[in-house]
Amino acid sequence: MNTTTSAPLTVADRCDRCGAQAYVKVTLPAGELLFCAHHARAHAPAFEDIAVDIQDETDKLLAEESAGVH
Image (tube, rainbow, N blue to C red; front, side, top):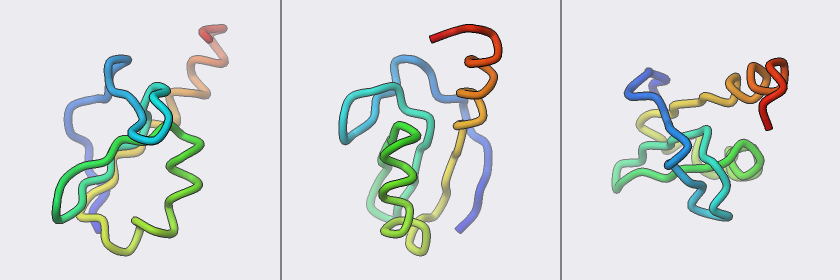
């Protein structure tokens, strides 16, 4: 698995599980999945070993919290 940076995720990118803003994009051999931070943590054991790439932008959550953005 590689961890690289591609185009940043935007507010329009939504979690495939719950529809919340996505902060993690997982590229698998058969396609991509988007996850909020909660569902990325919950499903990490299932995708970590098979992912081609994981784009993790959960650090934005701390920056938003520090800036008072909700």
